[in-house]
Image 1 (spheres, rainbow, N blue to C red):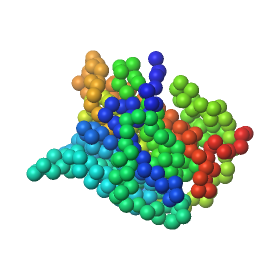
Image 2 (spheres, rainbow, N blue to C red):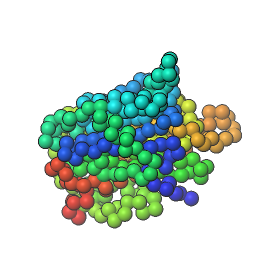
Image 3 (cartoon, rainbow, N blue to C red):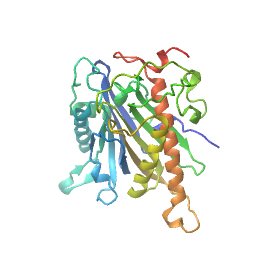
Image 4 (cartoon, one colour):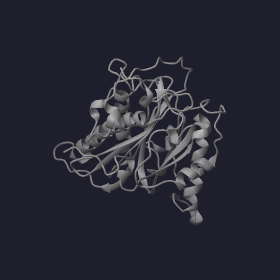
Length: 334
């Protein structure tokens, strides 16, 4: 039986908290995903214009396997400053990779999207405090969607982008979820049908009345290079190693590629992190590949891709028109 988690969001994964800092006046913001106990984290970067921090550390060949937080931010390269605030906030709480003399080094990978020149100032007034405020707002309850956090100033194709999330519980009891800030050059909406490419992925009528609408898309703007990017976190409560987490992040890109067309372009910085909180054992398989738990990882990766598609659609459906960007909810019907 297909079922979603309690909140249909990333916080359905045990051990995960999500916090936003939203600056509507600046048309930008920050979203932080916190796992204070540490989550085995992998990453896969498919866009050709990424803005990232600590992604090399997440390679399976490198030492540290757990991150305490992942930051998704607007602000392009300026938005990486928010990760400094998250590091300091976690360090004050003693959360991080243990060092000498009682100190810790919080591991905080980050990815940014381009939302410059969408508010009154070309560059939003980013600093470390934005990350600290996102941490202060972090909770394990329902996740706000739409024009919040990293999705505040997001733009998608020819309409307003935003932030969305979705989850699913597998028959094994393992929970898989996704959270995405959608600022894509490609479109989430099929211009022929006027509905999302992946609208059939809906579970339990999660898309609501918006999922029944077919709209007329405005024409695509003349885009300048590298002004897009969809960034995401997928998470699971399964016990994964770093190689398996990287594989799940890789497979999750399939959901982005189906939901956004085109994706992974030369002008996008599309990046997906996978966080595994290690609460649930993987199902034991029999046969030649049982030691690698290949089928269980495949199931999680496939589900992460589907959750990401749904999260992307929910980002578009929950966004509101602002800063001269028209949202799906305000488009004319076909």
